[in-house]
Length: 304
Length: 246
Image 1: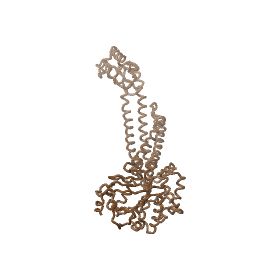
Image 2: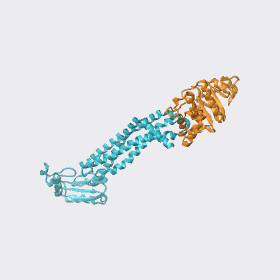
Image 3: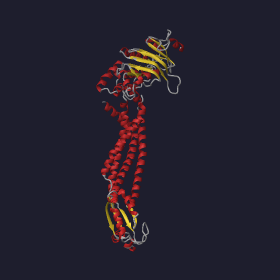
Image 4: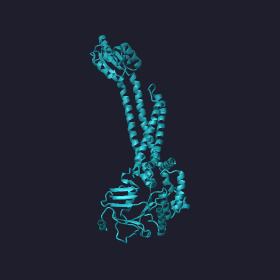
């Protein structure tokens, strides 16, 4: 009986303020889509980090006859200097960090170079002696690359030590910036959504102030009075959340997987599984925000 | 039933109290007229009984409850024991007579079966048996006030507060309303009625409490709108102090 009464109140409230309700639906829809996009972008960044960092190596370039960079003095790194590098990598302090070490001599480096840049202008002038011999170090924990860089770069005969992750940082920086932008827009839009919900509920309460006055007079409990209004806000924002969830899933399905998947082959991309994780978050955020702002908005009418 | 102990009510931004150290007691089943000029504190008195306001000083007990200690969550349940009628009826214009009365019962969670029985009964009692499906604007002022009274008493409250219920009605219609209120009073309900209508007060010969500038200046059994005898039934203050205020 009372439940039916409350539901019919909610229905008539939604119909009465239809234009405001549509505004609430749209604003929550857009803001929560941005929230979802921001979360998905973070997922994507983590996934790419996991993928690339596992493959990133530390490269130790040894001196050549033509180099003066680093510790080089225009003389080829000697065998003893290379052994010293090997010894450091295998020393007790570093052994636990190092997963694998591969050494490429001039010939192998040259072959690799030919494979990558063969046919481009200038490539024909390069001879094996120009290209430094290289230790490729795979790490058990990519975050510990600095330790290797520091321990090896001081050694004689070492031209340069590079953590390949450094090349990825700008990409992740850009993705992070995009993600923060999305969060920023989402927060602004959510503030707008909260205010809009509060206004809608006030409007709804104002148009029913006679009923509210009588309800208070005859002793309707506060919960009974406020529930229809809170439900009204929650229903409106739930519609927005569901739309946003749909948008996020479609975004992943068609933009990320189909379009980006075709464009960037080999790059790991987020899947529908990730989108499905985001959906309940969006719905919960939408419902909670609506319930909170509606109950604050209606509170003024409940003072006894 | 209702007891005021040295109750003072001050509103913000107004140095003069709406009620000034009022002490009085109203017993079960009494019919009390509250008279006085506009601004004398009649409405404040009723609002305090309803606990729409809290006193600035003093204590109010209604139906055995100390209103100062009543938590705001319990106020709605306290109000279910009170009925209220206003000068402007305050009916819901888009609801029928039946629904206006039933609304009261719905919002306090009464069952459909109870409503189906109680509403026709109370409509019959106030003399609107055949008009249950009318809308308020199809009724005369007197009939609208009867609907409001039906709404106020359908839950069988112990106290009925009436704030100038005849203020908008002509004398003969008012007389009908007063007959109804008297019948309600005879049923054991305490009735407190604020009014300006001297004719009604003089005719009914009931207890009269007169307020002037927030003070009780007269409390007479079987009084008239204006006093014939020297007034003052003292509550808490010496009689001389009261007399001076006159």
